[in-house]
Length: 308
Image (cartoon, rainbow, N blue to C red; front, side, top):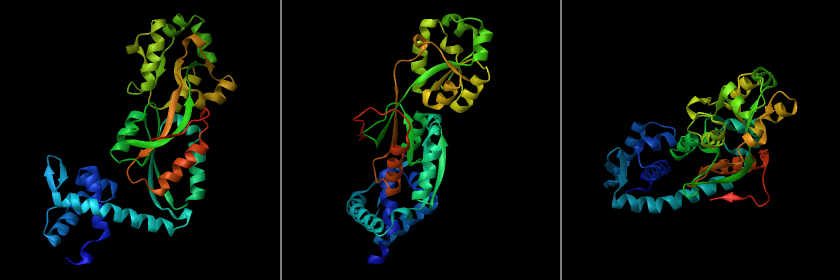
């Protein structure tokens, strides 16, 4: 076999198939099509006269020869990546970065993007706004490169940085409070629509547990998956909503929103992290993580450090 038959792109393709377990997942990661990936592997196997993959259901597994190839190829590809990075200035990173964030992050996300455009002007961004569970699923499937999420993160699977803590507050508007005509919390929750984030979010479990003592039926709680839109609806007199303190600071300060008494509020803080896959983090990903830590306006206790 001639050396030129061992192309870098083909070795990279084979290693990504091995990591992700399927041709389709590797095609998505490498921004190409599944037929193109299949053709690349088929030509390589024909040239060397050895099978690299065996199909197992919807996925694939390496043959004995394939495992040996990947074992030897991965260090070579890492060395080539390090060589390429060492010869580029910091601002030379280019391509598409897929970011996943929740609504709370929007309080500081615009400033983060502005800073990143200064540091790495050749990057393009694709932003997915969703709740943490869905974002982590997409990160695990390599459909996102970086996510900012609330709640627990699997540190065996992901790496990242703690961004700090936020509080979730039950709030209403002066207009809605006047219309309800009562300051009694039990009566207040009965008189007004109660809005929360989607039931798949761990916020909802916290919220429901605190509302039980006021006789609130969890099945009568309405949900909205956009916290900024929920805030606007509550400001306009739409009832009671569970909202991020970080997101509504200004509205609380100017009296547009009013926090309910302390006995109605969840006591647990909400922990946020910026997370990314442990395997093969690109230098641009690590730079974005570093800038997210610098730009976040969440509360950070002393000693808060790196995960994973």
